[in-house]
Image (cartoon, rainbow, N blue to C red; front, side, top):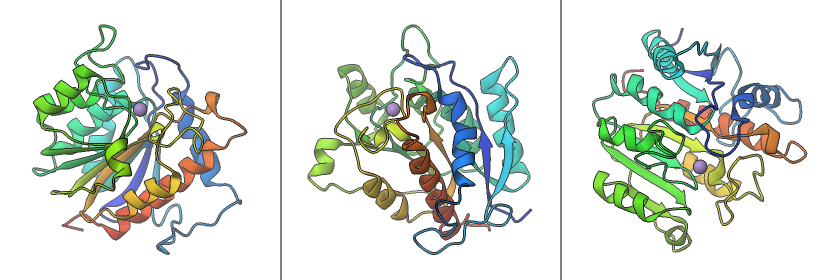
Length: 270
Ligand SMILES: [Mn+2]
């Protein structure tokens, strides 16, 4: 395969969700929408996002009885064969095992994390691997040199303390309104929780948190990435919570634009 080819992997895992199940059904729903004739295959930057040429689909990860281990292994295998992983979740807990695999190949790494939530809980309802915790595990293990969180609007006192402890750059929604921008210092891993969007734009999520970003604003953040993109994930789409399938085309468009951004920001060696 072409080195650095964006490669989709489905992570049909939602057992670490704290509130509702459903994101395990997302990979199939997003793929269906990506095949829909309702839109074309060109990104807004005019990259032709043709399946099999501009991106590959490695199918769904076989999770077995050790889902986190299976996800880490599957991502590592894709990187070893030259692919750039783009994982469709699944709940947000999948990002921790993904980063364990990604980090081995990237001595300098920034995570750009778009989400309503910090996901920095040390543990949530007794679970250190809950979807509320992945970025605590990531920062504890030193899996990123910089973590930038955008769209945050459901912080807690504990998570504020965690953000300070780990040196996280939190761009919360109040500061976003004031127009604050951020610098990406290293090659970027993009982790996109669909609930960063205002539920008016994307009702198909488990945790609808009002006051979020528009689709246009999220696209602008993705399109402004000015570092090599080493991989990414799109998580927490919950088709069971969707309204008239409104959120599926939003996810499909985001995936298309992320693949386009990966082509416009290739790996240094590619
Ligand atoms: Mn979230």
